Length: 399
Ligand code: PMP
Image (cartoon, rainbow, N blue to C red; front, side, top):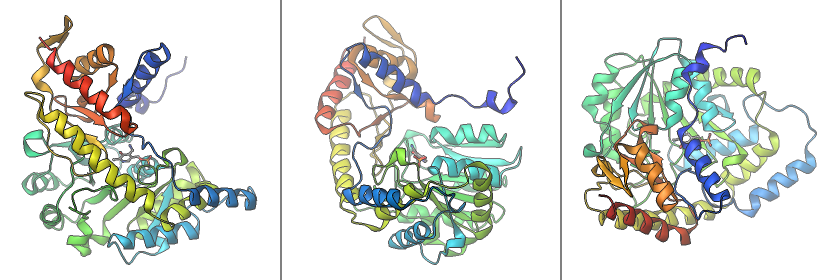
């Protein structure tokens, strides 16, 4: 067989999908499985979104659409950003993609040549690493351990940006930790960023509407509007509106960057399907009761998860204030065993938890933090308490 390209050897299959597949297989075998693994929102968009898609389907001519995104969609996104205080964008600043994941890949292609520095905090969302590997960037991980609430400090950012990476990628609220940076923390990081004009800043803030406890969502642009010429803001319909499979991501930034992404779109996908775009307009500009209600529900579920984790001796968990993930440090279990099975690391732990208790979580090493595991609490509410109970039992049974 002829050889595959080297970049494929560098990309790894998603660890999250591997856990989800194993859970699915056990379920098919008749096991009672509770999945805290994949980050899919367990709700549907409002009826107005379906109505808009149906109407678009009736009108659809089946022609190609705009490489950048339909005007109505870009306008709805611009208005949506204004609601969170990101103002002054025109259509020329914006572009769309087949999910934020696709936009991240497009941005990596648009901004990073081989060997260019690509810095981002650890724990990171898994695809950052793979995308960086595919484009052969020089990946610079900035460790943010649980002892520091998984947050990046200004001193750490200063040291990283002094190495002049081409791109710094920042994710707030965070997947996998659920941490949210406060206004002051963002301002302190923005003060560092202004000193290093050669670095592009991508803010992957797709969970910006899922923030709890009234802490609010803050972007470097709020603190330092002059960063507009190099901050790229990413959003997505997947999580906020319960539309992961519709595949619609949105970006806003400097015109040159939006144009580069549009050019890549013209070669990769041509356009986001216009029916999806029409549904996106309805989601972004229609009633917001579904995302608002879900955010309140997630906050209550966060409390429920944290209450149970607090009862497990040795498990340490910074309190998340957004998204729908909790990322406890479970290293207290390492070196012990469960039902005779040794637990040396996060992978053994997740595997034993799934086999013994039927609870699927994702090992922290998938996100660059092998002391932790990720609990995604989007499951139906009635499953949450029993799933947490099983985790508590599992830890109590460690020998
Ligand atoms: N960024 C983060 C932080 C995510 O958690 C995800 C989805 N899990 C994405 C980007 C990709 O989202 P999309 O479905 O829009 O591709």
